Amino acid sequence: MSDLVTLGHRIRHFRGLAGLTLDQLGQRVGIAGSQLSLIENGRREPRLRLIAALAEVLGVAVADLLDDAPPSERAGLEIELERLQAGSLYASLGLPAVRPGKNVSDETLTALVGLHRELARKSRESIATPEEARRANTELRQRVRSIDNHLPAIEDLAEEAVAAVGHVGGALTHRSVTLMAERLGFDLVHVGDLPHSARSVTDLAGGRIYLPPASIPGGHGLRSMALQAMAHRILGHSEPASYADFLQQRLEINYFAAACLMPRRQSVDFLREAKRNHDIAVEDFRDAFGTTHESAALRFTNLATAYLDMQVHFLRVGDDGAVYKAYENDGLRLPVDVTGSTEGQPVCRRWSARVAFDRVNRTTEFYQYTDTPEGTFFDSTQTGATAAGEFSITVGVPFVHSTWFRGRETDNRLASTCPDAACCRRPAAGLSERWSGKAWSSAKLHAHILSPLPSGTFPGVDDHELYEFLERHASDAG
Ligand SMILES: [Zn+2]
Image (cartoon, rainbow, N blue to C red; front, side, top):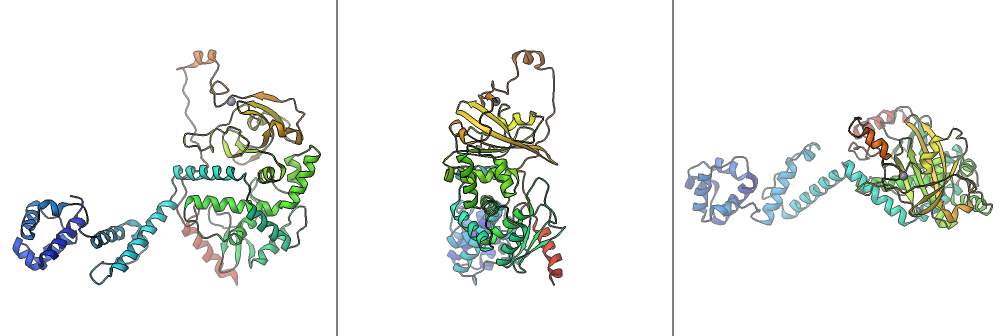
């Protein structure tokens, strides 16, 4: 027997066909009509002997009553509605349960069930498990690769937005960013009590963008955060419907902010000039536009293939050797796990991204050629540090493009055969013999980039905290 609700519906269905009231059928099988009603509503479990008696009076087989299919399409909808209304998701909304009696039309019932199904689907999607998050992230990386990390429509919007406030070149000032916000009808307000893990909050009704009072060290600058907040409006984003949607929006706002801070025309002019001089250096690009090294390196990947005719790769790697962020369209073989995800995977110890940590002098970029089974690559790596530890930012190209880069005359050259374990993972034979089975180590739990996210309208931000925050500040808006 499937469940009591379906059984009840089947009894009611066959009672209707037999033309009997609750009382009439109850009397024939020796129970009160009210008891039969409870059974039909799935609230009481009938004994098998009673089911047999009911089947006999209704002229059907016991198996007909115990069948787990709804007796009709209408009954199927009623059963589904009851189940959905009984769930914790609906209960969390604090709304009354609708009883799908005869006065509820088929149309109304269909609409209600349809809305319930969509609500359940969206809720499942927004509670991203780490597996779902990793899958969505991998899909996005593959999509980005297929378009050479270049989004022309957003380039156009960013170019218009900075031109409209009279920005002509060099670093985009905080003043220009404030003017851009004003054109969109927003005030930039700096506060010290943003909801936990929210970068910014936008009060659409009140026309305010709330930002932290100071830059996050080693993280996003204030200009970048303000531009990202504005980007949601400029790009016409609505509340993310899924984790994949959330990632796509985040990619787009990051892209927009970078394209404002390093506008296409000025950036391409700057980089083409450097290419003509065989002197491309991310550190110069960074300094010319007053951004972080990571922003400049990522921005370089937006423009390199579309405007400089070269394939590139980008890596942000932690001092533990694990990938934090990666992009390639030049055939570099990124380390991946079984799901195709690269975040958290260790890169080869012989790659520039890791070798650079061993340097003493880190004031300039580190240059290295690396021979791999996929060909030789030229890399330039800059190391930096945050409270969480050291990291390295690498931009690299296939050997053929190294001629355009500063540092191309370096003598640093290493060979890597990863993912072949003999490259840098397998210990030397002598050491294995000496230590195998004679030591034990406890692993550090990897504080992973894609840990489970609290569910809310915006992944990672708690709705309760968000709305409390908005309440707190709505009153001082004056
Ligand atoms: Zn290796």
